[in-house]
Image (cartoon, rainbow, N blue to C red):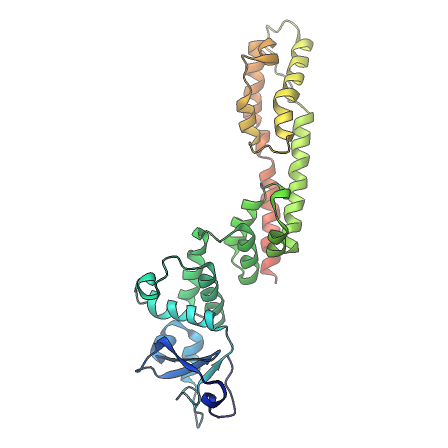
Length: 304
C-alpha cells in the first residue's frame, strides 16, 4: 500500500466511483483502488489486521490521507483482489451467507487466492486460515496449481497434496501448462520419482520372486520354470503395459491359480510363494522415494 504524498483532487484526474457495497456512510477511512473508492470502518480493519491497526495508531499530524474522497489512501492492489478481501472482512467474517449478498453460489478459486495473498500481506490471520481451508475442495484447485500456490505462499500441506496427486500420474498425462504452472523444480522432482518407480517396476517384472517349494513338490526345477513364465505372462506384462492403471498388489490379485500356467504348478508351492510375496510386500517400495522427494521439495519451498 502506498500513500500519495502530494495532496490533490483525484476526482478531476480519474473520476473515481463509489463501490456499490463497500462505501459505507458511517465509514471512517477512504481508500482508492483502481478508480474505485471504498469508505470503510477503521474498527473493522483494525480488529482483523495487525497491519491496519498499526497504521491507524500512528500519529497523523497534518496528513489528510483517508479523510475524504479528495485525499484517499491509494491502494496499489488489483481492485478485484481488494474487493474479494472486503467480502471476507465484512460478509464472511460477519456470518452473512456469501451468495445471498453477492449472487455467487460458487466462489471462484481466484476469490480464495485474493484473500490469501492480501491476508498474508496485511497480516490477517483469520483470512489466511479461511483461504487455506477452502481451496482443497474447489473444482479448479488442480495439483499443479496446488504446487504453485504452495511455493508462493509456503503452504506445505498443499505441496504434499499436489505432489502425491501427480506422482502416480503418467508423465505423458502431465501437460505443458501443468509443468509451467507447478514450476521447473517441482516437475524435476516428479520426473526423478517417476524414473525411480520405473526402475522398481522393471526390477519387479524381470526378477520373479523365488518359488517357496513345498516338501511334496515333485520337480522343483519344472515348478520354478512354470512360475517364472507365469510371472512374466501374467504379472510383468500387466505391470509394464503403457496404459496400466493398476497397483502392483492389485495386479497380483488378478492372477488366477486355477487357470493357465499357474494351474500346472504344485498347489502348495504356489500358495507358499504367494504368501511369501504378501509377507515381504515388495509393492510399496516407491513410497520411500515419494516421501523423500516430497520432503526435499518442501524444504526447497521453505528456503525461498
